[in-house]
Length: 162
Ligand code: DQA
Image (cartoon, rainbow, N blue to C red; front, side, top):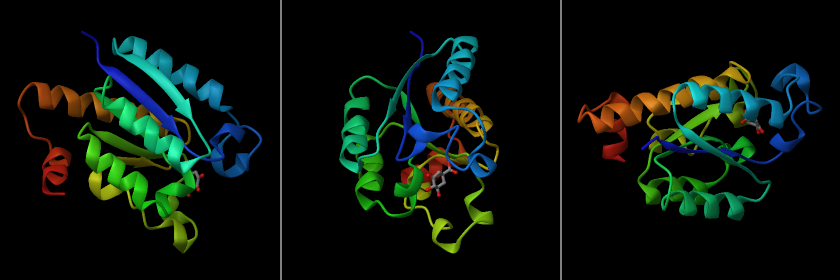
C-alpha cells in the first residue's frame, strides 16, 4: 500500500507567483503542486493538497489527515510564528509533519526566527524555494521508511520527547 501524503499550504501561499517573487520565487502554487506530484509518482506515494488562509481550516485538515494519511508536508506560512493551535494539532495527530518554507526564515526579520512547529516536527527544510517542498517530501518518506523498518531517526527521537 503506497504512502498517503498530505501537502498543506497555509495563508497567502495561494498568491505564489505574484506574491514577492524575489522572496518566494516565480512558480504558482499549482505549478509547485505539479512538481510535488511528479516526485510522489517517482516515490510511488499518493499525495493530496490543501491550501487555506484560515487557521481553523488548517487545524481541521490536520485532524482529518490522522484518519487517512501516513504523514504531512506543511508550509504553515505566517502561522508558523504565531499558532499554538496548529502546534497542538501536530502533537495531537501523532503522524509526522515535516515543516517546510520557501525562504530561509532565519535570514529574515526577527519575528520569523521562531517557529511554534519545529519542536514537534521530525525535521524542517527551508531556503530552497519550491525545492524545499521536494526535500521535505523526501525527508518525510525517509522518516516513514525508518519507522516501518523499526529504526529510530533523530527526528523521531526528538518527537517522542515532545
Ligand atoms: C514562509 C515564511 C513565513 O515567514 C511567511 O509568513 C510565509 C511563507 C515561506 O515559505 O518562506 O508566508 O512560510
